[in-house]
Image 1 (cartoon, rainbow, N blue to C red):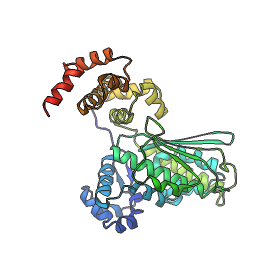
Image 2 (cartoon, rainbow, N blue to C red):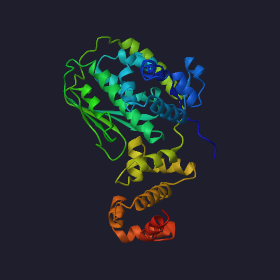
Image 3 (cartoon, rainbow, N blue to C red):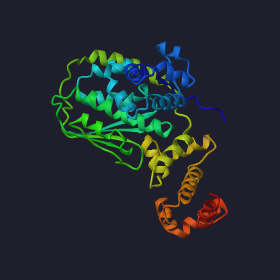
Image 4 (cartoon, helix red, strand yellow):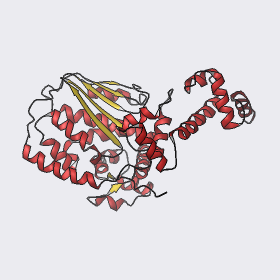
Length: 344
């Protein structure tokens, strides 16, 4: 099977963290070196990072700074003009509504690691970000924070009434620095708000149709042509199986269906199934593997009774769970738990 080309994330975004890293006693040079990345590459205008390099770099950022709010700080530093040609296009949009529509079309140019969708009904607006590539759990949480904080601050700067109250829903659990989210007032931030990874922003008070100060229809048209050309150069998402496994792992206390995961990507279940088959995989096999791994882990933890583990994993009764577990492991859940405890 031919290896998929990993999309690249613009490295310029990491340069914005220089002052934060310095105040924490480290530097981007030190982070990159620790992650096995040539620090000098960050001087190159078009240098991009793979998802694996992003995982490594952010892991080192958490380790070397000792801070949990790296994502929050990163989000504070991301401005509309941080996004190259797409940022210029957004700044030139006539209204916030058009800006959000433009951004959702070309969000892959900001980062292919997430997809953005924008829906509007009258004055009601919803902006949703969902992961589109496999990534480490720590990376997923850190990027959730960066996206939520940056989007809030960028939109707030364009509102006629910056004190408009609205809601931000994050699927992640409250981080140790959750109190910092009071800084996003008047936005109300809700954690653990979804069983699947996502950031959802819901507003009924945004001035969606008010004229923006730098509106320039001609500039938008020219910039969008450039964005369209850049988007065509991006490779199709690869590693669908890894993405499915990540989403199944992150879906605590639920078992998403193929249809639900396909819907998150805006594609049909048949299309996602076809992509998985190209990678010599299947949703059924991946779901069984992930659920069995979670079952083994919960059994060895010894905190929950077998019946509760069965329901937590989405089984309708304990008998079905026991049969599935025995088929995969050769022993019953109780026998597996007993052997695990004996081996401790």
